[in-house]
Image: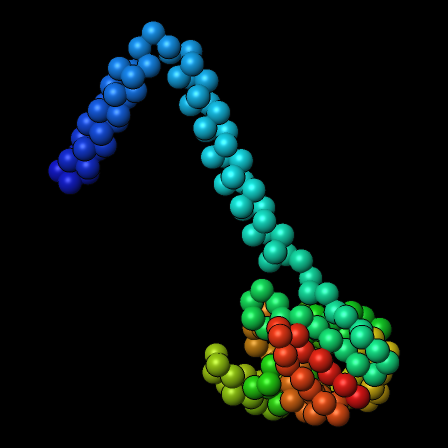
Length: 192
């Protein structure tokens, strides 16, 4: 142990002795009541801490709910991370997308491409894309069917990203297929 660590430990022990001595003096003759109070406060603190941690997990772990307000219209709330998340059926498989106006195309992660049955080892990664993480290789693909609620598109061009991605992106080329995109009061509405 270094001298600084010993001095730091000594300060903590002195502080503990002072607080402990004050508590012993204040509760002399009532040690059982003091112990009961300490246990109650400790359990309350533990309960609040665990409750807060669980609430954070619940908030970040829940999938974003989509709302289909009418035929040909999709409305989604802004997620806790500040992004808009959509779940779309791609070739019959539900995939989660982040709406990304900085992306040109629908961009699938390798994992999502595998989920919809693509053999990613056979894809031709001849394209390049500039991302916030640098340049990555991409492969052009065509998605047989993309479905959001009652809106279905067939033969949709997309790309598969060879780099690391935490999810798939819904880019501008697909968003431009909607007649209107409205963002208001923490909600994004796409209308055909």
